Structures are given as structure tokens and as C-alpha cells.
Image 1: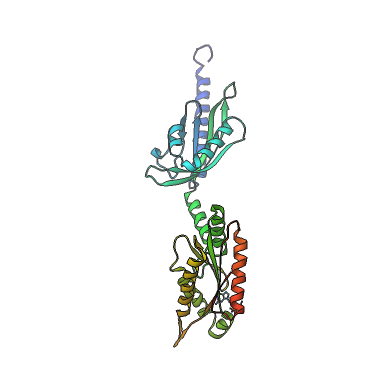
Image 2: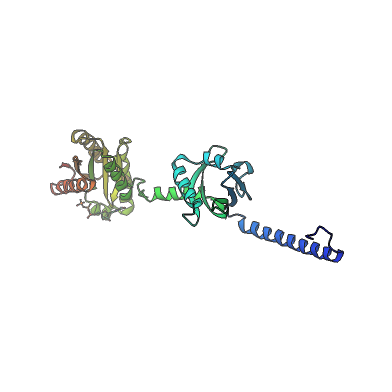
Length: 312
Ligand SMILES: Nc1nc2c(ncn2[C@@H]2O[C@H](COP(=O)(O)OP(=O)(O)OP(=O)(O)O)[C@@H](O)[C@H]2O)c(=O)[nH]1
């Protein structure tokens, strides 16, 4: 009653019944919300930009203490690589420039491990001057998805038969050297008469030969180098920081190591040879030009009779 007097008993009963119904409805809605959120990993949060207070309403996979109760604490746990992009996005939304705040970032958990979060929110209340009073949002732990993504990205750069980098992995490596402006040597390695070898001994033995050659070519390399499968029976060796003399020493030894390789098939010890085209990156060149020259050097080795190293 606005005048401070007590409402009549029957009206009081009616109000109490309405309140009980409203509370039951709220409890029912909360039950439905909890059921919807269960297992999604979604945590709902509210921020008050003016005081910095942060409230998390449900914890999903997190413990209560995992959540920062203040903007400053949340900020302190943000990964330094992600911090600026997250803040730019957040403040652009507070300033009313975007319809919502949305970011994917890494944050530190209390045990010191890194967790990936997808985070989204929007201002739900502003003061008369348009300043944000409340922002409501939700975040979800996407660490497992991120790990899976990284694993897939790595697998996409690996050749499943030999475990070496595939063409994509090699190209990424060459691009990164080009970006840094580094020098390197390239050796294109091709198994000789491999079609005939497969026809004679079968594809499975052919596969074992490719695996053995891959091991032999990649075993002695340093961290600056990369050996990968360029395709089919062709391998590419990238020797970082190597001039022709240094690269030649490595390649001649690898060529001899492949000559000594044998793969057993029943009673037989089988061997193969490889032809190699070797070249060195020249200042100002991009890797396409170097690859082309390595390919031409390989063609010369094939034309001259195979089982040799040709340089260009
Ligand atoms: N076993 C096996 N064979 C492969 C694989 N990839 C490509 N090959 C075979 O490699 C052979 C390549 O044949 P060609 O391109 O004619 O070359 P080559 O017989 O080695 O002749 P040269 O290169 O001129 O010495 C083909 O028979 C392909 O089937 C693989 O993953 N496993």
C-alpha cells in the first residue's frame, strides 16, 4: 500500500499467492537454464565497468576461486599475446562502436596452466550520459578444441607414411626462411626406377623403402634443416645457413648412406639408389626460383644416368 497501511487480509492472501507463483516460476526457469547450461561449459558473468566488479553466476568446469572477482584481476591473468586485442575489442564495445564484445584468448588458471576461453558479452545498462553500467556475457573453456585444432594443423603438415613434413610443411618452412631473409641450400632427391621396383617387389616393399630412405635422409640433420616428402618418391632437403661447399658435403654423405641401405624381402636384401639435384639460394631470390633450379639439377642427374648428385 502506498499510504503505508496494511492491505486487507484477502488482498494480502492474493499477493502472497502471486509471490509464491512468481518464485516458483523463477525456480522453474533457473532449473531450465541450469539444464541448458549443463555440459556446455558456458559460464555467465556480469561486469560493472565503473567499479570493475565481476560476478560469475555459474561455474561449470571451473572452481569458484578460478574466477577473478574484479576486472583488474581478470586482466592480470590474460596472456600477454592476447591482451591488447581483447582490450581493444572490449573498449570498442563499451564505447558503443560494436554490437557486442567478443574475444578468444588464453588465460592463466590457478595451477599455472593455460586455458583458452571464448568470451562474449554486451552492455545491458547505461546511465543517462550513455556510460556503461552493466555488461552481461558468457564464456566457455575451449582448451580441448584448441589442442585438437593444433594437432590437426600439425597433422596437415605431416606425411602419414614417413612421418616427415609433407609438401605443405616444407612450403611453410621455406616461406618462414624467406620472411626472415635467411640463406639455405635445397636438395631434391628422387628414387631411381621406383616404378620398376614397385612392379618387381610390390607396393608394400616400396613403402618400406620410402620409409627407410626418409629415416636415412633426415637422421643427421640439424635444427636449422628440414627433410620432407615432396610427393610420391621425391624428397626435399632444406639445409639452413648452408653454402654450396657445406651443403655438398652433407648431400654426398646422404647419397652414400642411401646406397648402403637395404630392405629385406624374404631371403633377399633389396637396395635402391637416388638421384639428387642440389642448389643454393642466391640473395634476393624467393623459394620458387630456388626450387625450380633444384628440380632442373635433378633432371640433369636423371638424364646423365641416375644415382648421382648434380649441382646448379
Ligand atoms: N610404394 C609406393 N610407391 C609410390 C608411392 N608414391 C609414388 N609411388 C610410385 O613411384 C613411382 C614413380 O614412378 P616414375 O615417376 O615413373 O619414376 P621412376 O620409375 O622412379 O623413374 P625415374 O624417376 O625416372 O628414375 C610410381 O610407380 C608410383 O606409383 C608410395 O607412397 N608408395
